[in-house]
Length: 199
Image (cartoon, rainbow, N blue to C red):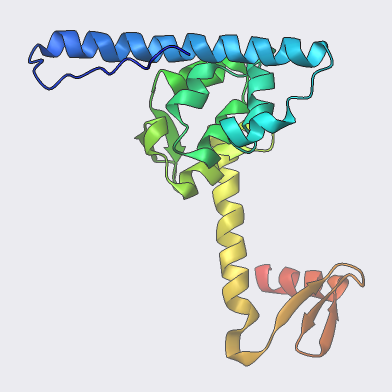
């Protein structure tokens, strides 16, 4: 087995050389991941059991390597967002053009109620930003983000109203009514009340 080469940069003061090494090493890591993914795919095609690799490359990562081998996930996504597992998983599920946009670090539009927005780099997305930006079918459009925000606002208001005055308010889908404490209010009555208030 070849000895591991120890690289020491303690006496290197040329920042250009250091940056060149870092950038070439990152690119080498990307290419190595592609090769590993291709090798894993071929091993499985030959009937080999590769499940034990989970302990070497991380739980859940075997599925990611399979997607890399099928050109469904960019290795740059895995490497660039490895420290943010939730975000990496979300990005890996996107179409390749959207993955490339994330890898390039292009600012994303995060909408706000009222029509304003913030520009946030992918690596700086908060947990709430991720929930808002990523929908079940990929990245949400501006309009879809606004709809999401309105839905979240309604949920928060309803959650606050549920215990107003110590009375629980719970929607009953099965019986198509609203339970206010122990009182059942049918939907038709609710609609009439709303109509009277709005009228």
